[in-house]
Length: 51
Image 1: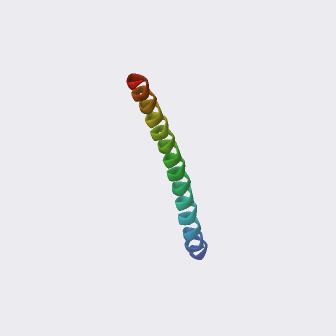
Image 2: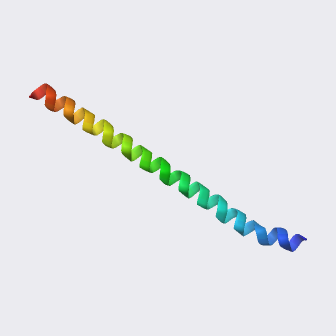
Image 3: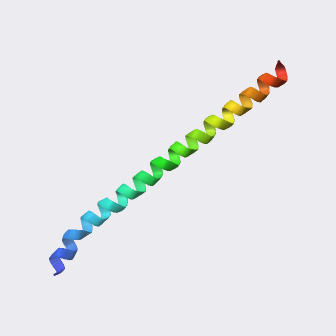
């Protein structure tokens, strides 16, 4: 019984790490999208003000 618990422990850690990695990558993609959107909007505003 104890051996099954110890055998399942690495698999649980791998699943947790995979979930954290997927969440982190989604957050990074979302942040990059927002930075791109804000930069593009500011650039258009500056070009509109100058032009």
